[in-house]
Image (cartoon, rainbow, N blue to C red; front, side):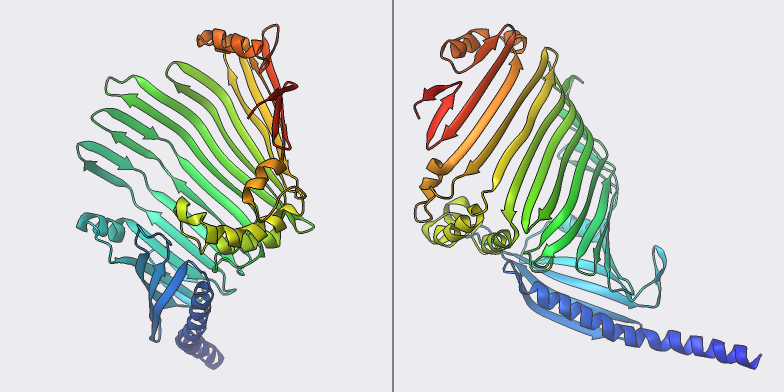
Length: 427
């Protein structure tokens, strides 16, 4: 009995002392993360205060997000993290065993928000973070169901829930699920179906906090359906299973990125298309150079005129030269869609001859481009659309080839000259 009492006493003492010790560990981790974030050229940490109690703490951070746009003010935030220390933490979602659990309040400085919007952010959006014993960060975002009437339009948005994990600052993965949206308006009724976003990325260069991270892995974004009807109930647009996905890999310090877009079915204006696809590949991209480009772009103005001014181009040109040294490739592997009359397909492959490109003259890149493209389509598709006369004209000009009821073309661009089906086209 005496031994049991001693054991219980030790457990109780440990449970009481541990939060104080853990609070110091959590403070160190917070400060380390903020120091790394401060090295991000797009972020300024104006101030950060950390108040520590025995079982809890509070971090208040004043952050500015620099947009580098003269016409748009920078975003200024006050982030308040209310933290509970482990090892045992009681939360609204049950008991957690971790170093800490935080609930964040985000307030906008110098941004005139409507009171209703400000209350919405406070009441409907919940952002929490869990720091595990291995110091991984698990962030949970919950956006509650919304049902409002705005300017006579009834809007209902289903609950959205996301959970994201930063593991050892080397791997980021997570998933976000949204039930969808309905808008019953005076003119159109819109329905967006269930939506899912997931990703799994592994860091190979840079840092997630500093905004220069280069990762391998994948992400996928899927909208199950989009439907638009007019006030009379007639269908204006129907789309199903819209997909955006990407996967990145690295071999010998050269990165390959494959991006795919697709939709199972699209109906609009009396037209129906199935299995629409666009698959794009970027290959032989030097990882270190991409990192340098990302770091530079983070410091440039976001508007196009200033982003590509003489000063910016002077900084960018040497990086373009380095990027071209490995003969990178841009390929449209598949641009296709199925129509009632048959399948329309096309593809393209493009490289840039770095021996022709002159870093002192960015316009020389046009002469350095080497591209090949081809495509096929059923003639019946254009006939149904009333475009047969125009197609026949292109056939006569040699821009299209016609074999029975199939149209095709082959194009080549090199040394600043374009050839289509073997015919030189003056540019």
